[in-house]
Image (cartoon, rainbow, N blue to C red; front, top):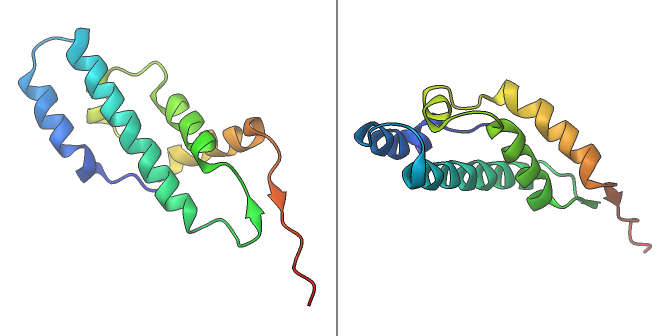
Length: 109
């Protein structure tokens, strides 16, 4: 999955305008970054899940976003946004945790 660094540009500008770390501003920025990660993940994965395969993309993407953001400050997230190579490991781990991926039986006909 790719997360465009450009989508984080407005957040970066806002973060640069705020002083210091912590507080409500950082929590709001983290929430915005997380929402962006989840949206990008779900949109990208939607087109890559084969027909007939059922997986809860929202749960997987929520899990992956949490793992990608764990232990990182807002400044770290903006300075070093997740790359597609970093994205794969958390997504694979989350797929295992979320539960079984089911495959729909083909229609008889």
